[in-house]
Length: 320
Image (tube, rainbow, N blue to C red; front, side, top):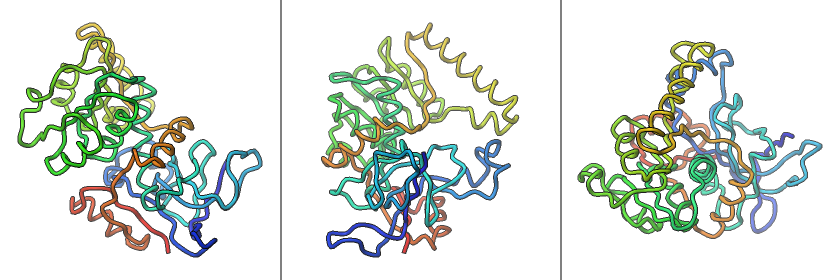
């Protein structure tokens, strides 16, 4: 069933008070420049936005896990045709969970999409468990940083590559090794071999290194699958079979040449994942830093700042 979130009110310690509901910005520059047009172009105009934190305003008849007035956070699926840059957003019940009281709406809105993307890769695909070794390529971004914290919470030994400015934060989050990709030969610097590699960069070089650093039976997961690019180029009818064939070819190739599993990973709604993300966020073990907030009226300025790399981290939109 569907749930409608009120984006003009939130709970405060003194009761129900006018405030600001939050939407966090993902990097939509690729979508605005045409990435995913095979799916979205027939549906234009679109409302962007996937993350959300707000208050339940109305419920569908079969919704039982939430109630009107509750503060919740969550995220829409990447292919959703309706976005969250709006006064009201409609989400399915399994796309939301109760917001921890210990974090603000601003903090909460930056977490779900990135953390769910990392969760789907590490827990649903690689099935990481205590004592295993995990490498995160690109640990400074929201997904990479979420992956590091999730892996640490499950008792894994974590190494990562990142920019030098992120090293202190990543080590404080529990990673055992953080290698500056800009100043070090990270292929030579990374210690040992891994049970799982999550590659948030997904270029040919990081794929090669990641696969070569895996143990036999390990899982390589990239967030840069080619399904959207091939379908944009040739349309769904031709592009989707081509991308499927490419994925299957790589899976067979690496299974026989390296004894590892190869995957393209995407975020999907996951009630179990949302529950764990909420639990870890409430305990202070999962955070996604927010660099700046903008009013919803400043969407253009916010996107321009991200496109020009003026703001390295997460940006949040607030509603008056």
